[in-house]
Image 1: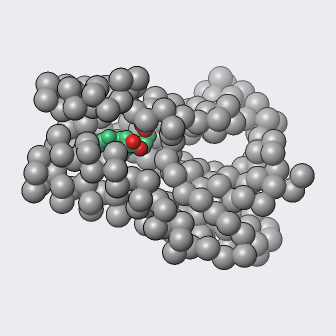
Image 2 (image 1 turned 90 degrees about the vertical axis):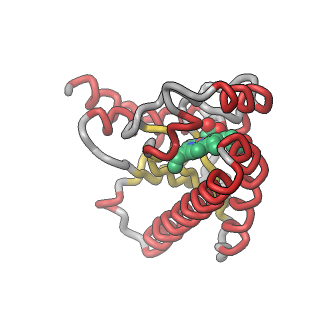
Image 3 (image 1 turned 180 degrees about the vertical axis):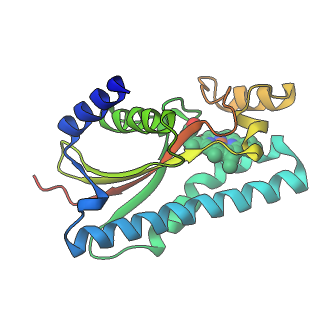
Length: 194
Ligand code: HEC
């Protein structure tokens, strides 16, 4: 309990977190809502595309779809959600499959903070914070579901493991149990103040 409070306090100090309860300006509220919408759109479109591919052609094909479609789906969500300020949605995690999705030090601190909150029983924490470059970020926890286990779980079929290894030799994204923190949606608001 005490340790978690200390982690939270140090993350707060490092990132100047914006608490949602205290979100005051209309601009921040608007960003929060758009960030949530973009994360939801990326999650549901990815999930639908993946499930369809797996049902029609099996999980090994699903890996190819994830690899090829994930960036295209994110690009389409970004294109559909542009206002005055450019916002970009992606995914990150403490243990990544694609090293392009690796978090920055600040994003890692937020993921660790999410992990601490989930250890206390929270289901899917979210947060908006300002990074040292002046940009604002939104992050929301992605929780491991039963349908993710084929590719991210504890016992992965050899043909799937092989297909993953072939595309992602540095894969770290296995061994998750249902309910674990798998990663986070990340929305970056690109209007650096410096
Ligand atoms: C068919 C296999 C497959 C299934 C099922 C699957 N994933 Fe993935 N997942 C992948 C692949 C492949 C990548 C790497 C995508 C890329 O190259 O960006 C990935 C990447 C991710 C990432 C981005 C961070 C990283 O590790 O690179 C997250 C977060 C994620 N998956 C969560 C989930 C969740 C949650 C589910 C279930 C709803 C799920 N995945 C189901 C194969 C799968």
